[in-house]
Image 1 (cartoon, helix red, strand yellow):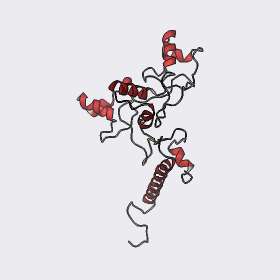
Image 2 (image 1 turned 90 degrees about the vertical axis):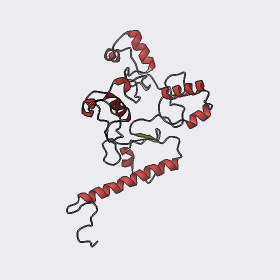
Image 3 (image 1 turned 180 degrees about the horizontal axis):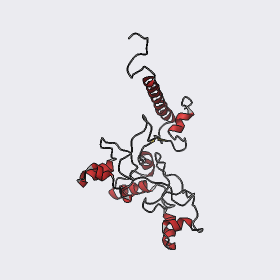
Image 4 (image 1 turned 30 degrees about the horizontal axis):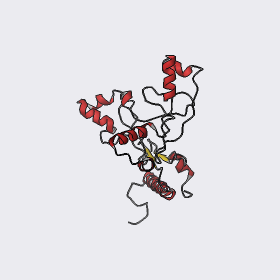
Length: 232
């Protein structure tokens, strides 16, 4: 990793502990556009500038795309997991609609407070993480003290046990993929040399793109032409 510039690692939000690349959404080469639906926030993969989920909803909605995109995506249909909304709490929320970890969700129900009042209450305190999900490729947190997995891998494990396809704990932890998240690329579980090669290749491609862009924008230059005074 010595050949990779620290500035480029910062651009990708790289942390050796997480081993996850977070591509900057607004970057002209490394980034990807966001879904045009209000309050969606997912990456758009199609020519319609919609994420996969919103494109599926749009095709079944029988609406003009401009009208469809102007309506905020329902909270229950948004993806992703973030930290509990209690300041300093290191546990993941259970649902986007509630935005609290399971312990704080239980506490809120007992106190019978809405979310803003609950977050301001002096009895509400942050809680430490239970630890990282035991799946080698996953960077999410345990969903609770009973399971050694994040919520998604806990559910997947339970389903495989019901279906009779569970391969055992060790094989499950090594074989399961990470839970995808927007513009992140998870490199956990790969050998350090492979990780270094991937990041170095991205750096070099980005460097060439920067040089091409600078050349194309230089006075008297157009992309694909030779500098002034140079015979073709």
